[in-house]
Amino acid sequence: MLSLAGTLPSSGPAAAPAPEGPQLQHGWVLLDDDR
Amino acid sequence: VLAEHPRNLQGSARTADVCIVGSGPAGMTVALELERRGLRVLVLEAGGTHYDPTSQAMFEGTLIGDRLFDMGVNRLRYFGGSSNHWGGFCRMLEDWDFRDKVEGIPGAWPIGRRDLDPYLPRAREILELPGFPADRRLDDQVTHVHWTYSPPVNFGLKYRDHVKTSAGLAVVLNACVTNLIERGGRIVAIEVSDPDGHRDTVQAGLFVLCAGGIENSRMLLWANERNEGRVVREPRTLGKYWMEHPHYTVADALIEGDPRIDPDRRGRAYIVPTERAIREHRMLNCALRLEPHEYEGTKRLAADLACIAPRLGRWAVERTGKRLVCGYRVRAAWEQGPRESNQVRLGTARDALGIPRAELHWRLSALEKHTVRQTAVLFGRYLAANGLGRVRLLPWLTDPGPDFAPDDEFVGNHHMGGTRMSADPRTGVVDADCRIHGMANLYVCGSSVFPSAGHANPTLTIVQVALRLAAHLGRRAAHGTST
Image (cartoon, rainbow over all chains, first blue to last red; front, side, top):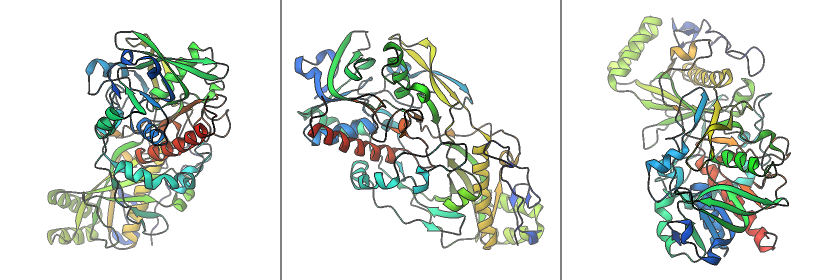
């Protein structure tokens, strides 16, 4: 139901946060069927 | 006895069983507990009874890195220490806050929460705390928690009259420590100076530094320099692994109403990640604080959602019109990873007594940004999956770059680390009893001994650690091993 893009660092604590995913729309944490 | 000046101390009054440096929550807690055990206690306070700009200026220093606060104003140099501007927020650290959370970030304590729990009842008495409401797990990723509020207790005001009439406890004001005098692996005396530069010495069997999360490091760095490295004999971590709690507004939330979330009497509700979430997402601990928006703010939030997700937005706008949905500002206060590079050093500038001022090297990192973003997303997922609402992260938080918001509260004025607690002298300054590794009778107390900080405001933990130290010192004195 919910497919947020991962926001984990790719490796270890120093890794930069991953970019915004398709389900984080302009900052909103949305469900697939919200739109 | 409350002495205005070190030179007011006559003869035997300059000798105590225990000498404590600093009269804030840590110092006064240790002092009062040892007085109760019948020991003669001398507390040295660098400032007077009230705020004084000249005294306060002794705290000025240089911040290198993320210049988000001013060392000259976010701690206080007078009787009661930083309890003079304490907000009263209390919450215990979690079990998992005493263990490593993220690989490569050394956060484990040599003690666990079970070692501090026995001191909670007495800490509640001292801080005048009501009970702690139970936490409520919302799903396997987020938990709704509560803070408990102290009135807040101001240690200077609360205990001034008691100190004045006490036979066993003396607080000496305007007594700035200028040196620790070491002989053969123990401290034999402390040298103090009044604001005019007049020097005195104080003798004791045991010494405890409770001068604050920057001053403890500064004092030890300076004493080590003057004693050619014989105070902290393994100094590789001295001043290092210094931490703050970042404080930022991170998101907004539209919530239709969740019966499982109870705002406290201040109208706030708190959300934290579960231990499982911390492990799964390789993050630190974090607390989100929900504060209700005004109605206009809720309307704007619903309108913004309508632009992004029209069908959902129509629902939100309609429910907002009926006042069935409430908007919240989501603020966060969270854990900073302990890092060697974040550290107190002695700077080149000197204060009025000739002591090098503190130079604090301090930066936030990608791990801190990851931690707060992930926590906000997890809360958003909980609301969405349960049909309770939606969360919108602020643009700075969704930006993949390293930057934080340029304008905010920034920090909690929680100064932690620098004299971290460890079982091994190579990885910390004090042992599990707060005694400096390799020193017979010199202890450190306060949040400077925290190896890691969780997300909780530190004062309750400071008082618990101080009570545990007082119990240790009391046992030690009873067995005649203090001299």
